[in-house]
Image 1 (cartoon, rainbow over the protein chains, first blue to last red):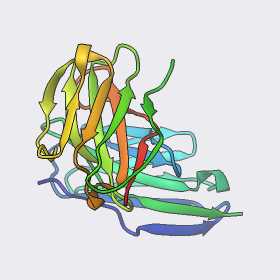
Image 2 (image 1 turned 45 degrees about the horizontal axis):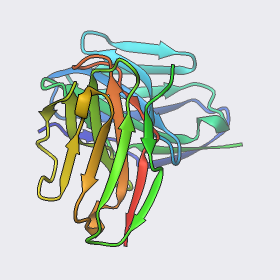
Image 3 (image 1 turned 180 degrees about the vertical axis):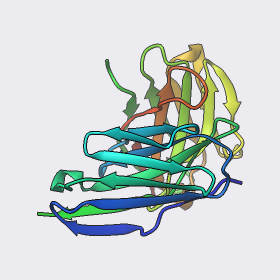
Length: 111
Length: 114
């Protein structure tokens, strides 16, 4: 059974700092890995999707990497802003096309 | 393009009552998902539809939860009777095709069972 872990559960940083969010998964047989953002009271928004054959994806100030063999992914946020404050969830798609989510990391960027 | 619509946004009921949630996916999206997100947890898949057929309902508590997607468009999720542990946000998502593709999520329905 696939398990996705995100540690720590919460993170607070000052504005402008570069930061890394970590995600680990137990079964390396995945199709892809996605990073989502969830704002309070809102649904999930997909930020980046990395196919299993890829090593990284970039979108603006966000960069996600994938090391499938070690079961790890990182989301790098450059020059963080207060508007980046949200919960960031990592999810992997397994061989059965089922998405398994981590519990998320709640990020607070202090002005 | 319009996003995934869900209603109601909030619902408060007492245990043993019944409740229903509605979802309208993005037009043309064949695959529809219902997820349950308990506070502090990641979303858990309850049921997945491909058009109007069920693809995966292995984690749906079928003694109290039911879902349907008549005509392969909008969908309804029902809980009868509700328990305290059903308090959660119920998220609907849709995707253009079945498989590991981008999912588009609705805003969710926050259910509180007292």
